[in-house]
Image (cartoon, rainbow, N blue to C red; front, top):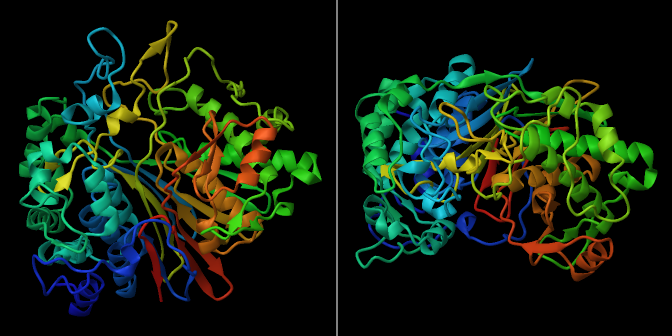
Length: 596
Protein backbone atom coordinates (compact mmCIF):
# COMPACT_ATOMS: atom_id res chain seq x y z
CA UNK A 1 0.00 0.00 0.00
CA UNK A 2 1.36 3.40 -0.92
CA UNK A 3 1.84 5.84 1.91
CA UNK A 4 -0.97 8.46 2.04
CA UNK A 5 -0.55 11.20 -0.54
CA UNK A 6 -0.83 14.00 2.07
CA UNK A 7 2.31 12.72 3.74
CA UNK A 8 4.31 12.89 0.53
CA UNK A 9 2.84 16.32 -0.17
CA UNK A 10 3.93 17.52 3.27
CA UNK A 11 7.46 16.27 2.68
CA UNK A 12 7.56 18.02 -0.68
CA UNK A 13 6.38 21.24 0.93
CA UNK A 14 9.15 21.09 3.52
CA UNK A 15 11.61 20.38 0.72
CA UNK A 16 10.68 23.77 -0.77
CA UNK A 17 8.58 22.31 -3.57
CA UNK A 18 11.44 20.10 -4.74
CA UNK A 19 8.92 17.46 -5.76
CA UNK A 20 7.70 19.70 -8.54
CA UNK A 21 10.92 21.32 -9.67
CA UNK A 22 14.13 19.91 -11.00
CA UNK A 23 17.75 20.91 -11.40
CA UNK A 24 17.37 24.46 -10.16
CA UNK A 25 18.85 26.25 -7.19
CA UNK A 26 16.21 26.97 -4.55
CA UNK A 27 16.46 28.97 -1.32
CA UNK A 28 17.31 26.82 1.67
CA UNK A 29 14.48 26.44 4.19
CA UNK A 30 14.90 28.36 7.46
CA UNK A 31 15.43 25.10 9.35
CA UNK A 32 18.48 24.30 7.24
CA UNK A 33 20.60 27.34 8.00
CA UNK A 34 24.05 26.51 9.35
CA UNK A 35 25.66 28.16 12.36
CA UNK A 36 24.04 28.89 15.71
CA UNK A 37 20.32 29.48 15.18
CA UNK A 38 18.88 32.05 17.58
CA UNK A 39 15.31 32.45 18.71
CA UNK A 40 14.38 28.76 18.79
CA UNK A 41 11.50 27.90 21.11
CA UNK A 42 10.50 24.54 22.60
CA UNK A 43 7.92 22.62 20.57
CA UNK A 44 4.81 21.45 22.44
CA UNK A 45 2.70 18.37 21.74
CA UNK A 46 0.04 16.38 23.57
CA UNK A 47 0.12 13.06 21.67
CA UNK A 48 3.48 12.25 20.09
CA UNK A 49 6.76 13.78 18.96
CA UNK A 50 9.68 13.04 16.62
CA UNK A 51 13.02 14.85 16.64
CA UNK A 52 15.87 14.39 14.18
CA UNK A 53 18.87 16.21 12.73
CA UNK A 54 17.02 17.36 9.60
CA UNK A 55 13.46 18.70 9.27
CA UNK A 56 12.66 16.28 6.45
CA UNK A 57 13.58 13.36 8.71
CA UNK A 58 11.54 14.77 11.60
CA UNK A 59 8.54 15.16 9.31
CA UNK A 60 8.86 11.56 8.12
CA UNK A 61 8.92 10.40 11.74
CA UNK A 62 5.87 12.47 12.64
CA UNK A 63 4.06 11.08 9.60
CA UNK A 64 4.52 7.55 10.96
CA UNK A 65 3.27 8.61 14.39
CA UNK A 66 0.22 10.27 12.82
CA UNK A 67 -0.50 7.00 11.00
CA UNK A 68 -0.60 5.19 14.34
CA UNK A 69 2.97 3.98 14.25
CA UNK A 70 5.20 3.29 17.21
CA UNK A 71 8.39 5.09 18.21
CA UNK A 72 10.48 2.49 16.35
CA UNK A 73 8.36 2.98 13.21
CA UNK A 74 9.13 6.69 13.39
CA UNK A 75 12.83 6.01 13.95
CA UNK A 76 13.10 3.76 10.90
CA UNK A 77 11.47 6.36 8.67
CA UNK A 78 13.76 9.05 10.10
CA UNK A 79 16.91 6.97 9.62
CA UNK A 80 16.07 6.27 5.99
CA UNK A 81 15.51 9.97 5.27
CA UNK A 82 18.73 10.87 7.12
CA UNK A 83 20.60 8.40 4.89
CA UNK A 84 19.49 10.62 2.01
CA UNK A 85 19.58 14.18 3.39
CA UNK A 86 22.36 13.89 6.00
CA UNK A 87 24.66 11.30 4.34
CA UNK A 88 27.77 12.76 5.96
CA UNK A 89 26.65 11.69 9.43
CA UNK A 90 24.67 8.45 9.36
CA UNK A 91 22.95 5.97 7.12
CA UNK A 92 22.30 2.35 6.25
CA UNK A 93 26.01 1.89 5.53
CA UNK A 94 26.80 2.53 9.21
CA UNK A 95 25.74 1.45 12.67
CA UNK A 96 23.86 2.66 15.69
CA UNK A 97 22.59 2.10 19.22
CA UNK A 98 18.91 2.12 20.21
CA UNK A 99 17.36 2.48 23.66
CA UNK A 100 13.66 1.59 23.70
CA UNK A 101 11.05 2.06 26.44
CA UNK A 102 7.93 -0.05 25.87
CA UNK A 103 6.13 1.24 28.94
CA UNK A 104 7.42 -1.56 31.17
CA UNK A 105 11.12 -2.00 30.51
CA UNK A 106 14.10 -0.42 28.78
CA UNK A 107 15.73 -2.47 26.03
CA UNK A 108 19.07 -1.83 24.35
CA UNK A 109 19.72 -2.81 20.73
CA UNK A 110 23.32 -2.92 19.54
CA UNK A 111 23.75 -2.30 15.81
CA UNK A 112 27.43 -1.39 16.05
CA UNK A 113 29.64 -2.39 13.13
CA UNK A 114 31.98 -5.37 13.48
CA UNK A 115 35.50 -5.90 12.21
CA UNK A 116 35.70 -8.28 9.24
CA UNK A 117 37.05 -11.76 9.92
CA UNK A 118 40.15 -11.06 7.84
CA UNK A 119 41.54 -8.13 9.87
CA UNK A 120 44.70 -8.33 11.96
CA UNK A 121 46.04 -6.14 14.76
CA UNK A 122 48.35 -4.45 12.27
CA UNK A 123 45.36 -3.09 10.31
CA UNK A 124 46.27 0.56 10.90
CA UNK A 125 50.05 0.26 11.27
CA UNK A 126 52.58 1.44 8.70
CA UNK A 127 55.44 -0.85 7.60
CA UNK A 128 57.68 0.62 10.32
CA UNK A 129 55.12 -0.28 13.00
CA UNK A 130 53.92 3.27 13.66
CA UNK A 131 50.22 4.21 13.46
CA UNK A 132 48.90 5.46 10.13
CA UNK A 133 47.78 9.08 9.85
CA UNK A 134 44.04 9.15 10.42
CA UNK A 135 43.10 10.17 6.87
CA UNK A 136 45.27 7.42 5.40
CA UNK A 137 43.36 4.94 7.52
CA UNK A 138 39.91 6.47 6.96
CA UNK A 139 39.68 6.91 3.20
CA UNK A 140 38.95 3.69 1.31
CA UNK A 141 38.03 0.13 2.14
CA UNK A 142 40.50 -0.44 4.99
CA UNK A 143 38.32 1.32 7.57
CA UNK A 144 34.94 -0.22 6.65
CA UNK A 145 33.21 -2.31 9.30
CA UNK A 146 30.23 -4.58 8.69
CA UNK A 147 27.21 -2.21 8.76
CA UNK A 148 24.76 -2.97 11.54
CA UNK A 149 22.07 -0.32 11.80
CA UNK A 150 19.52 -2.12 9.61
CA UNK A 151 19.75 -5.33 11.66
CA UNK A 152 19.21 -3.35 14.89
CA UNK A 153 16.21 -1.55 13.43
CA UNK A 154 14.82 -4.85 12.19
CA UNK A 155 15.20 -6.44 15.64
CA UNK A 156 13.45 -3.54 17.37
CA UNK A 157 10.69 -3.41 14.73
CA UNK A 158 9.93 -7.12 15.08
CA UNK A 159 9.24 -6.54 18.76
CA UNK A 160 7.65 -3.09 18.77
CA UNK A 161 6.65 -2.09 15.25
CA UNK A 162 3.01 -1.36 14.44
CA UNK A 163 3.15 -0.28 10.79
CA UNK A 164 4.23 -2.63 7.99
CA UNK A 165 7.97 -2.51 7.33
CA UNK A 166 7.55 -1.47 3.69
CA UNK A 167 5.52 1.65 4.55
CA UNK A 168 8.36 3.02 6.68
CA UNK A 169 10.49 3.54 3.55
CA UNK A 170 7.96 5.47 1.48
CA UNK A 171 8.87 9.02 2.58
CA UNK A 172 12.56 8.37 1.88
CA UNK A 173 11.83 6.75 -1.47
CA UNK A 174 9.69 9.71 -2.54
CA UNK A 175 12.34 12.23 -1.51
CA UNK A 176 15.13 10.26 -3.18
CA UNK A 177 13.21 10.15 -6.46
CA UNK A 178 11.77 13.66 -6.46
CA UNK A 179 14.70 15.43 -4.83
CA UNK A 180 15.49 17.61 -1.83
CA UNK A 181 17.30 20.96 -1.59
CA UNK A 182 20.96 20.92 -0.58
CA UNK A 183 21.16 22.54 2.85
CA UNK A 184 23.80 25.01 3.96
CA UNK A 185 25.27 22.41 6.30
CA UNK A 186 25.61 19.75 3.61
CA UNK A 187 27.06 22.31 1.19
CA UNK A 188 29.60 23.47 3.78
CA UNK A 189 30.74 19.95 4.61
CA UNK A 190 31.11 19.04 0.93
CA UNK A 191 33.09 22.26 0.37
CA UNK A 192 35.46 21.46 3.24
CA UNK A 193 36.14 17.86 2.18
CA UNK A 194 39.23 17.43 -0.04
CA UNK A 195 38.58 13.74 -0.76
CA UNK A 196 35.18 13.85 -2.47
CA UNK A 197 36.67 14.79 -5.84
CA UNK A 198 38.76 11.60 -5.90
CA UNK A 199 35.76 9.36 -5.18
CA UNK A 200 34.05 8.99 -8.58
CA UNK A 201 30.56 8.17 -7.31
CA UNK A 202 30.66 10.93 -4.68
CA UNK A 203 31.99 13.46 -7.18
CA UNK A 204 29.16 12.71 -9.61
CA UNK A 205 26.62 13.11 -6.83
CA UNK A 206 27.89 16.02 -4.71
CA UNK A 207 29.74 18.17 -7.29
CA UNK A 208 28.54 20.07 -10.34
CA UNK A 209 29.86 19.80 -13.90
CA UNK A 210 32.76 22.09 -12.98
CA UNK A 211 33.79 20.04 -9.96
CA UNK A 212 32.34 22.57 -7.51
CA UNK A 213 30.04 21.69 -4.57
CA UNK A 214 26.37 21.89 -5.51
CA UNK A 215 24.93 25.27 -4.56
CA UNK A 216 22.71 25.64 -1.52
CA UNK A 217 19.13 24.92 -2.57
CA UNK A 218 20.05 22.81 -5.59
CA UNK A 219 17.57 19.94 -5.92
CA UNK A 220 19.48 16.72 -5.38
CA UNK A 221 18.01 13.40 -6.49
CA UNK A 222 19.28 9.93 -5.65
CA UNK A 223 17.41 7.38 -7.82
CA UNK A 224 19.99 4.71 -7.01
CA UNK A 225 19.24 5.03 -3.30
CA UNK A 226 15.52 4.98 -4.07
CA UNK A 227 16.04 1.63 -5.81
CA UNK A 228 17.98 0.34 -2.79
CA UNK A 229 15.22 1.45 -0.43
CA UNK A 230 12.59 -0.23 -2.61
CA UNK A 231 14.49 -3.52 -2.40
CA UNK A 232 14.77 -3.22 1.38
CA UNK A 233 11.11 -2.27 1.69
CA UNK A 234 9.88 -5.26 -0.31
CA UNK A 235 12.48 -7.92 0.53
CA UNK A 236 13.47 -6.93 4.05
CA UNK A 237 16.90 -6.47 5.57
CA UNK A 238 18.25 -9.72 4.13
CA UNK A 239 18.41 -7.93 0.76
CA UNK A 240 21.14 -5.73 2.23
CA UNK A 241 23.25 -8.54 3.69
CA UNK A 242 23.17 -10.75 0.59
CA UNK A 243 22.62 -10.44 -3.14
CA UNK A 244 23.57 -7.53 -5.34
CA UNK A 245 23.78 -4.88 -2.58
CA UNK A 246 26.17 -7.00 -0.53
CA UNK A 247 28.23 -7.84 -3.61
CA UNK A 248 28.51 -4.16 -4.51
CA UNK A 249 29.72 -3.27 -1.00
CA UNK A 250 32.36 -5.99 -1.00
CA UNK A 251 33.54 -5.02 -4.49
CA UNK A 252 33.98 -1.39 -3.46
CA UNK A 253 35.84 -2.22 -0.26
CA UNK A 254 38.16 -4.80 -1.76
CA UNK A 255 38.66 -2.98 -5.05
CA UNK A 256 39.84 0.31 -3.56
CA UNK A 257 43.52 1.22 -3.63
CA UNK A 258 43.35 1.27 0.18
CA UNK A 259 41.58 -2.09 0.24
CA UNK A 260 39.72 -3.57 3.19
CA UNK A 261 38.76 -7.06 4.29
CA UNK A 262 34.94 -6.97 4.13
CA UNK A 263 33.55 -10.22 2.69
CA UNK A 264 30.17 -11.63 1.74
CA UNK A 265 30.48 -14.03 4.67
CA UNK A 266 31.05 -11.13 7.08
CA UNK A 267 27.81 -9.55 5.89
CA UNK A 268 25.88 -12.82 5.99
CA UNK A 269 26.93 -13.55 9.55
CA UNK A 270 26.32 -10.10 11.04
CA UNK A 271 23.90 -10.05 13.98
CA UNK A 272 22.51 -7.16 16.00
CA UNK A 273 22.50 -7.84 19.72
CA UNK A 274 20.02 -7.20 22.50
CA UNK A 275 21.99 -5.98 25.51
CA UNK A 276 21.22 -5.03 29.09
CA UNK A 277 21.02 -1.25 29.46
CA UNK A 278 23.18 0.44 32.07
CA UNK A 279 21.00 2.33 34.52
CA UNK A 280 21.81 4.24 37.67
CA UNK A 281 20.49 6.91 40.00
CA UNK A 282 21.05 10.63 39.90
CA UNK A 283 19.20 12.41 42.70
CA UNK A 284 15.45 11.95 42.04
CA UNK A 285 15.96 10.31 38.64
CA UNK A 286 17.03 7.04 37.07
CA UNK A 287 19.27 7.45 34.04
CA UNK A 288 19.51 4.65 31.45
CA UNK A 289 22.08 4.42 28.66
CA UNK A 290 23.91 2.05 26.32
CA UNK A 291 26.32 -0.55 27.68
CA UNK A 292 29.58 -1.59 25.94
CA UNK A 293 30.64 -1.52 23.19
CA UNK A 294 29.46 2.02 23.82
CA UNK A 295 31.16 3.97 26.57
CA UNK A 296 28.36 6.52 26.54
CA UNK A 297 26.10 5.04 29.20
CA UNK A 298 28.91 4.33 31.64
CA UNK A 299 30.59 7.69 30.98
CA UNK A 300 27.39 9.60 31.70
CA UNK A 301 26.53 7.58 34.80
CA UNK A 302 30.05 7.90 36.17
CA UNK A 303 30.04 11.67 35.70
CA UNK A 304 26.63 12.11 37.33
CA UNK A 305 27.48 9.69 40.16
CA UNK A 306 30.67 11.60 40.95
CA UNK A 307 28.78 14.90 40.87
CA UNK A 308 26.10 13.57 43.21
CA UNK A 309 28.76 12.33 45.64
CA UNK A 310 30.35 15.78 45.61
CA UNK A 311 27.02 17.38 46.31
CA UNK A 312 26.33 15.06 49.24
CA UNK A 313 29.65 16.12 50.72
CA UNK A 314 29.21 19.86 50.35
CA UNK A 315 26.15 22.04 49.77
CA UNK A 316 28.22 24.49 47.73
CA UNK A 317 28.87 21.72 45.22
CA UNK A 318 25.15 21.16 44.60
CA UNK A 319 24.70 22.01 40.94
CA UNK A 320 21.06 22.85 41.58
CA UNK A 321 22.39 25.85 43.50
CA UNK A 322 24.65 26.85 40.60
CA UNK A 323 22.14 27.85 37.91
CA UNK A 324 23.47 29.36 34.69
CA UNK A 325 23.65 33.12 34.46
CA UNK A 326 22.34 35.39 31.73
CA UNK A 327 25.00 36.67 29.32
CA UNK A 328 25.07 38.58 26.05
CA UNK A 329 25.70 35.65 23.71
CA UNK A 330 23.75 33.63 21.17
CA UNK A 331 22.96 31.07 23.86
CA UNK A 332 21.80 33.73 26.31
CA UNK A 333 22.93 31.64 29.29
CA UNK A 334 26.31 30.55 30.59
CA UNK A 335 27.16 28.00 33.29
CA UNK A 336 28.99 29.32 36.33
CA UNK A 337 32.74 28.72 36.58
CA UNK A 338 32.18 26.36 39.53
CA UNK A 339 29.70 24.27 37.56
CA UNK A 340 32.14 23.96 34.64
CA UNK A 341 34.97 23.10 37.05
CA UNK A 342 33.01 20.32 38.79
CA UNK A 343 31.62 18.78 35.61
CA UNK A 344 34.97 18.90 33.80
CA UNK A 345 36.80 17.29 36.72
CA UNK A 346 34.20 14.54 37.00
CA UNK A 347 34.49 13.91 33.25
CA UNK A 348 38.28 13.65 33.53
CA UNK A 349 37.86 10.77 35.96
CA UNK A 350 35.27 9.09 33.74
CA UNK A 351 37.45 9.38 30.62
CA UNK A 352 40.47 7.96 32.46
CA UNK A 353 38.42 4.85 33.28
CA UNK A 354 37.07 4.77 29.73
CA UNK A 355 40.54 4.55 28.22
CA UNK A 356 41.61 1.86 30.68
CA UNK A 357 38.67 -0.52 30.85
CA UNK A 358 36.05 -0.04 28.13
CA UNK A 359 35.76 -2.04 24.92
CA UNK A 360 33.50 -4.67 23.35
CA UNK A 361 32.42 -6.70 26.38
CA UNK A 362 32.14 -9.83 24.21
CA UNK A 363 35.95 -9.70 23.91
CA UNK A 364 37.14 -7.93 27.06
CA UNK A 365 35.85 -8.38 30.63
CA UNK A 366 34.41 -4.92 31.36
CA UNK A 367 33.59 -4.32 35.07
CA UNK A 368 30.35 -2.50 34.26
CA UNK A 369 28.65 -2.68 37.65
CA UNK A 370 31.85 -1.86 39.53
CA UNK A 371 32.47 1.21 37.37
CA UNK A 372 29.07 2.71 38.20
CA UNK A 373 28.93 1.54 41.84
CA UNK A 374 28.05 4.55 44.06
CA UNK A 375 30.75 3.66 46.60
CA UNK A 376 33.42 3.58 43.90
CA UNK A 377 32.20 6.88 42.43
CA UNK A 378 32.17 8.50 45.88
CA UNK A 379 35.81 7.48 46.29
CA UNK A 380 36.64 8.95 42.88
CA UNK A 381 34.87 12.18 43.86
CA UNK A 382 37.35 12.74 46.71
CA UNK A 383 40.02 13.41 44.06
CA UNK A 384 38.28 16.62 42.99
CA UNK A 385 39.52 19.74 44.74
CA UNK A 386 39.53 23.49 44.29
CA UNK A 387 42.10 23.30 41.50
CA UNK A 388 42.05 21.20 38.33
CA UNK A 389 43.79 17.84 38.45
CA UNK A 390 44.61 18.47 34.74
CA UNK A 391 44.89 14.77 33.95
CA UNK A 392 43.21 11.96 35.87
CA UNK A 393 44.46 8.43 36.31
CA UNK A 394 42.16 5.41 36.06
CA UNK A 395 40.70 4.06 39.27
CA UNK A 396 40.59 0.47 40.45
CA UNK A 397 36.95 -0.62 40.61
CA UNK A 398 36.29 -3.88 42.41
CA UNK A 399 37.23 -6.91 40.36
CA UNK A 400 38.99 -4.90 37.64
CA UNK A 401 42.40 -5.83 36.32
CA UNK A 402 45.13 -3.37 35.39
CA UNK A 403 46.64 -5.92 33.03
CA UNK A 404 45.47 -3.81 30.12
CA UNK A 405 47.18 -0.74 28.69
CA UNK A 406 45.19 2.50 28.35
CA UNK A 407 43.92 3.45 24.91
CA UNK A 408 45.70 6.65 23.87
CA UNK A 409 43.95 7.01 20.52
CA UNK A 410 43.00 10.53 19.46
CA UNK A 411 39.38 11.33 20.31
CA UNK A 412 37.34 12.21 17.22
CA UNK A 413 34.02 13.80 16.27
CA UNK A 414 31.04 12.43 14.25
CA UNK A 415 27.41 11.06 14.14
CA UNK A 416 23.60 11.90 14.39
CA UNK A 417 20.82 11.46 16.96
CA UNK A 418 17.05 11.04 16.88
CA UNK A 419 14.34 10.66 19.52
CA UNK A 420 10.66 9.74 19.35
CA UNK A 421 7.66 9.26 21.64
CA UNK A 422 4.44 7.68 20.34
CA UNK A 423 0.76 7.86 21.30
CA UNK A 424 1.05 5.01 23.79
CA UNK A 425 4.01 6.59 25.58
CA UNK A 426 6.62 4.24 24.16
CA UNK A 427 9.86 6.10 23.58
CA UNK A 428 13.13 5.74 21.74
CA UNK A 429 16.57 7.33 21.85
CA UNK A 430 18.84 6.36 18.96
CA UNK A 431 22.32 7.52 18.06
CA UNK A 432 23.57 6.50 14.63
CA UNK A 433 26.77 7.05 12.67
CA UNK A 434 29.04 6.41 9.71
CA UNK A 435 31.90 7.77 11.92
CA UNK A 436 33.84 10.65 10.33
CA UNK A 437 32.11 13.02 7.89
CA UNK A 438 31.18 11.02 4.75
CA UNK A 439 32.58 7.85 6.33
CA UNK A 440 35.10 5.93 4.22
CA UNK A 441 34.21 7.99 1.12
CA UNK A 442 32.90 4.91 -0.65
CA UNK A 443 29.45 5.35 -2.21
CA UNK A 444 27.56 2.15 -3.02
CA UNK A 445 24.02 1.87 -4.40
CA UNK A 446 23.36 5.48 -3.39
CA UNK A 447 24.62 5.33 0.22
CA UNK A 448 27.97 5.83 1.96
CA UNK A 449 29.96 3.19 3.80
CA UNK A 450 31.27 3.78 7.29
CA UNK A 451 34.86 4.12 8.50
CA UNK A 452 34.06 2.81 11.98
CA UNK A 453 37.12 0.56 12.24
CA UNK A 454 39.14 3.70 12.93
CA UNK A 455 37.35 3.78 16.30
CA UNK A 456 39.62 0.93 17.35
CA UNK A 457 42.98 1.70 18.92
CA UNK A 458 45.53 1.76 16.11
CA UNK A 459 48.09 0.33 18.56
CA UNK A 460 47.24 -3.14 19.89
CA UNK A 461 49.56 -3.13 22.89
CA UNK A 462 51.77 -0.87 24.93
CA UNK A 463 54.66 -1.91 27.18
CA UNK A 464 53.74 -5.54 26.66
CA UNK A 465 50.13 -5.06 27.77
CA UNK A 466 47.17 -5.33 25.35
CA UNK A 467 44.87 -2.35 24.78
CA UNK A 468 41.24 -3.26 25.52
CA UNK A 469 39.99 -1.56 22.36
CA UNK A 470 42.49 -3.22 20.01
CA UNK A 471 41.44 -4.51 16.58
CA UNK A 472 40.23 -8.13 16.52
CA UNK A 473 38.12 -10.08 13.99
CA UNK A 474 34.41 -9.84 14.70
CA UNK A 475 34.90 -7.25 17.43
CA UNK A 476 32.91 -4.03 17.75
CA UNK A 477 34.94 -0.83 18.17
CA UNK A 478 34.42 1.28 21.28
CA UNK A 479 31.94 4.12 20.82
CA UNK A 480 30.93 7.18 22.84
CA UNK A 481 27.36 7.25 21.54
CA UNK A 482 25.02 7.94 24.44
CA UNK A 483 21.30 7.64 23.64
CA UNK A 484 19.70 8.31 27.01
CA UNK A 485 16.33 7.81 28.67
CA UNK A 486 15.46 9.48 31.99
CA UNK A 487 12.86 8.26 34.49
CA UNK A 488 11.43 9.50 37.78
CA UNK A 489 12.73 7.22 40.55
CA UNK A 490 9.56 7.47 42.63
CA UNK A 491 6.98 6.75 39.92
CA UNK A 492 9.03 5.08 37.18
CA UNK A 493 7.50 7.52 34.70
CA UNK A 494 9.48 8.44 31.59
CA UNK A 495 10.89 11.96 31.94
CA UNK A 496 13.01 12.49 28.81
CA UNK A 497 14.65 11.03 25.71
CA UNK A 498 17.83 12.67 24.47
CA UNK A 499 21.24 12.27 22.85
CA UNK A 500 23.70 13.98 20.55
CA UNK A 501 26.29 13.43 17.84
CA UNK A 502 29.84 14.56 18.49
CA UNK A 503 32.15 11.54 18.68
CA UNK A 504 33.94 11.36 22.01
CA UNK A 505 32.44 14.72 22.99
CA UNK A 506 28.97 13.13 23.07
CA UNK A 507 29.38 12.19 26.74
CA UNK A 508 29.99 15.81 27.68
CA UNK A 509 27.12 17.08 25.55
CA UNK A 510 24.67 14.67 27.18
CA UNK A 511 25.99 15.50 30.65
CA UNK A 512 25.46 19.21 29.96
CA UNK A 513 21.90 18.65 28.78
CA UNK A 514 21.02 16.41 31.74
CA UNK A 515 22.34 18.92 34.26
CA UNK A 516 20.41 21.63 32.42
CA UNK A 517 17.15 19.68 32.42
CA UNK A 518 17.33 18.13 35.86
CA UNK A 519 19.38 20.46 38.08
CA UNK A 520 18.68 23.78 36.43
CA UNK A 521 15.07 23.05 35.38
CA UNK A 522 15.63 24.38 31.87
CA UNK A 523 13.22 23.49 29.09
CA UNK A 524 14.54 21.22 26.30
CA UNK A 525 15.39 24.10 23.98
CA UNK A 526 17.27 25.99 26.69
CA UNK A 527 19.19 22.82 27.60
CA UNK A 528 20.18 22.29 23.97
CA UNK A 529 21.15 25.97 23.64
CA UNK A 530 23.51 25.95 26.63
CA UNK A 531 27.16 26.50 25.71
CA UNK A 532 29.07 23.24 25.49
CA UNK A 533 31.90 22.53 27.91
CA UNK A 534 33.76 19.65 29.53
CA UNK A 535 36.93 17.60 29.49
CA UNK A 536 37.99 14.37 27.83
CA UNK A 537 40.86 14.06 30.33
CA UNK A 538 42.92 16.66 28.55
CA UNK A 539 42.27 20.36 28.30
CA UNK A 540 39.08 21.86 29.65
CA UNK A 541 37.09 22.51 26.49
CA UNK A 542 34.69 25.44 26.18
CA UNK A 543 32.63 26.42 23.18
CA UNK A 544 34.30 29.12 21.13
CA UNK A 545 32.28 32.35 20.83
CA UNK A 546 29.94 31.17 23.59
CA UNK A 547 32.27 31.08 26.61
CA UNK A 548 32.87 34.52 28.13
CA UNK A 549 36.37 35.84 28.90
CA UNK A 550 35.38 35.97 32.58
CA UNK A 551 34.57 32.25 32.59
CA UNK A 552 37.85 31.38 30.91
CA UNK A 553 39.85 33.60 33.31
CA UNK A 554 38.32 32.01 36.39
CA UNK A 555 38.90 28.47 35.12
CA UNK A 556 42.53 29.36 34.34
CA UNK A 557 42.91 30.72 37.88
CA UNK A 558 41.83 27.32 39.16
CA UNK A 559 44.52 25.60 37.12
CA UNK A 560 42.53 24.60 34.06
CA UNK A 561 44.22 24.57 30.68
CA UNK A 562 41.29 26.06 28.76
CA UNK A 563 40.85 25.38 25.05
CA UNK A 564 38.03 27.15 23.16
CA UNK A 565 36.74 24.84 20.42
CA UNK A 566 34.02 24.71 17.83
CA UNK A 567 31.80 22.20 19.63
CA UNK A 568 29.09 21.33 17.12
CA UNK A 569 26.72 19.17 19.12
CA UNK A 570 23.45 18.03 17.55
CA UNK A 571 21.21 17.51 20.56
CA UNK A 572 17.63 16.27 20.21
CA UNK A 573 15.57 16.33 23.40
CA UNK A 574 11.99 15.28 24.16
CA UNK A 575 10.76 15.90 27.71
CA UNK A 576 7.51 15.05 29.44
CA UNK A 577 5.40 17.99 30.60
CA UNK A 578 2.16 18.26 32.55
CA UNK A 579 0.23 18.49 29.26
CA UNK A 580 2.23 16.11 27.09
CA UNK A 581 5.66 16.62 25.54
CA UNK A 582 8.14 19.41 24.92
CA UNK A 583 10.92 19.15 22.35
CA UNK A 584 14.13 20.98 21.60
CA UNK A 585 16.69 20.78 18.79
CA UNK A 586 20.31 21.87 18.80
CA UNK A 587 20.75 25.38 17.40
CA UNK A 588 24.16 24.38 16.00
CA UNK A 589 22.67 22.10 13.34
CA UNK A 590 19.51 22.01 11.22
CA UNK A 591 17.28 19.63 13.20
CA UNK A 592 13.78 20.18 14.54
CA UNK A 593 11.32 18.52 16.90
CA UNK A 594 7.79 18.04 15.50
CA UNK A 595 4.70 16.81 17.29
CA UNK A 596 0.91 16.85 17.57
